[in-house]
Length: 428
Ligand code: B12
Ligand code: SF4
Image 1 (cartoon, helix red, strand yellow):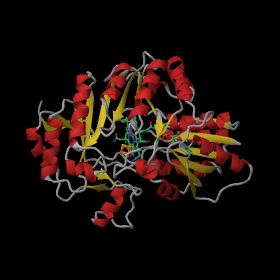
Image 2 (tube, rainbow, N blue to C red):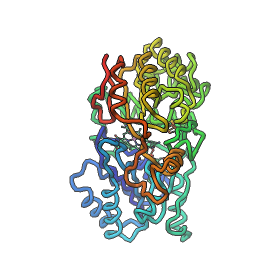
Image 3 (cartoon, rainbow, N blue to C red):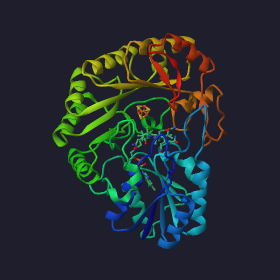
Image 4 (spheres, protein in one colour):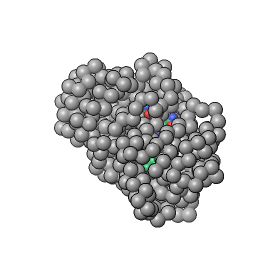
């Protein structure tokens, strides 16, 4: 069977995101013996035309459409990418009679809704997906086609053959232009799937409240490919959080050190699972930057946002990172349930006790259906059951406004930046 894998993400800001996931699906299907072709719609002048030509030339029997972003999640300047995805789907339908299987990061967030809205034949949701794509393609080949509109849940476990880094030659060279900020070629790499945390606005921990780490041998093999074939010596771990479990993470850091002693890397930490031994293990094994996904520094807000740590734990993490000379950023999310003048001030005061390199502050939280926030938003009548959440919809506490933040930032030691990296306020 001929299978065309399409990466439909054309967004190049804030930086181009290498379509590793779509590439893994391509590699898995190729390894399973299917005749495959890969089309990436980024960096081409006329993406729809490129897709049409590929469909006509390759004549696929199955199209694996990888969708990454639904919208930009920016309340100040919301931008939906669905109109373009609909156009992509339209081209698939008019230029081909192949069945369309939908997958990708956007399917973590709104799986059934996307399959229905785009009129796809099948969908696979959740972290992982490459092995499930192979399974579905095999069924189609054997004439065991599932019912149209079926959405399956991916098994997050890493498959020894199918969950492999794709060949570098699959990707456009533009993806490997060094990041101007760090002046090095860096790459996102996922070493665990799912998330052990339960942030109320996120479908990751809601769907799969355990994380599944890549097996050690497979990780070593991936690192060898990254260093030799990709020539990348700097990676960002894009796991929901890096430290799901302290002891296991310490061991994993040591594995990185043994496997790739010259690799430099960054990761996201939750203050909930920290020991000094862990921070030492990060430092000794190549970690060069940490993002703390704090969301808030207010005790009440941390509890309401489902963050499972306290302001004291947040400050302690900052101090430990400083002690070990590990630079870090703090990500904040203002406007969650119950956010008000007092809680905003509490956050600013907590972060004043820390010394991050920068602070990224978002305001208003994008509401997705399979999350706890969805139910809060319904209860507070911010949304109605019939609302179409495919369009950017945000939750913002009625007691919160951007002015409150600007006022609170008069007492900040730091500059706060928004999602578009504009300065919101504060001082150094
Ligand atoms: C790391 C990350 C970033 C990094 C990327 C860094 C880099 N160098 O790649 C940065 C910070 C730059 C970033 C930016 C943005 N991001 Co981001 N990002 C992520 C994150 C945390 C991980 C993505 C990743 O690399 N995954 C690892 C790869 C291997 O997995 P994957 O692509 O999902 O592929 C797997 C499956 O999806 C599946 N699969 C993939 N394709 C297909 C196709 C088929 C047919 C099938 C069956 C399966 C399948 O199999 C793959 C292998 O298992 C995700 C959250 C998440 N957990 O996915 C958000 C996420 C993808 N980002 C999101 C968004 C919105 C953005 C931005 C638009 C934000 C903004 N305003 O700037 C930008 C867009 C950037 C761009 N150019 O596209 C959203 C997208 C969904 C949505 N809400 O619209 C997500 C899901 C976060 C969320 N929960 O809301 N992001
Ligand atoms: S830590 Fe990140 S991935 Fe995990 S539940 Fe929270 S927002 Fe989602």
